[in-house]
Image (cartoon, rainbow, N blue to C red):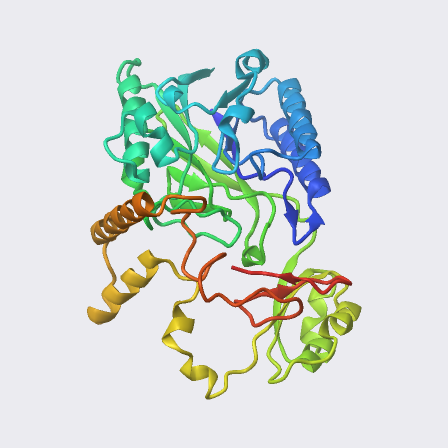
Length: 431
């Protein structure tokens, strides 16, 4: 069985206010060409089809066009919902479009019901595990706890139970949208942490031949049988060094995996540059980035005048500007409160554990204990102070936190904000 594994299309998403719709359209065309040219037998889309639960009309039209093209190829396509998708909206009319070979799996209750696709060696069972929000999916999958590992483990128990009823030698593929231990994240993934514990061990997926993962935006191999395709396009400057790809997977008669990485089209390269303004404007080493989307960080001791207007003449596609002056003795003695700003209670507690144990960090079981304690405290506080915004997961120093500095227009310190090009000088707050 030859499969094409992709995920995290995020249709409708922009990049620092630059529309990515044409780049997304180009990717869909590239995907369809690859299906034809490489004689793909099944297309796997592991979640986050859209960027928002209620996507813009242009994104819906692009997805509709993608489904029509894939159906016209005559190649079965299996899609699951991710944490950015509205599972209910994405799954509308799934029973009808299944007749065209498009299989949408958005209901946790269907985790143990496979899509059976035959090839020259027999049947392959495909199980679609949509993003399982622990508190919402716990009952549907029969998990004993509202934790990512628990709900995903319960869903996989259903998969293995169904496989046990199939003929010996039935090969199996799972699509899942989750943060698996060993994966490397980026700035553009929405946090799915519950109480600070989100990563699930690869052992959760034991017993199947291939696991097509979505959620993390970097293409990566966790194990030979467990892989992330990553997003086809970069959605943050933290992905500047990513090689955007899909996995072409051949599953042989014995269920062994043979993987080939296929590159995706790059609409424009990304570059992160840092230095004093005069150096960025004059040094030849920055020439390769003159046609890139650029994130610049100025290190001048004092803020230069009109830096964006000067930079845009050399880098016409600059999108983000930050100010990180070279460290002074005063900056080296930042207050304890400043160092904690933007960190969650869970992160602060884990830092404390690491500090008092001479660098030995909390292990996964200890992190769960800490998480449970904070959940109990939040639950108790919620009962006492119920109201709008209670227990919304906002980190200390986040929106609405007491003592937070007000937002101001213009250029701000790196880590506190970035300035976008434009006449209004509005600050892009980077958290």
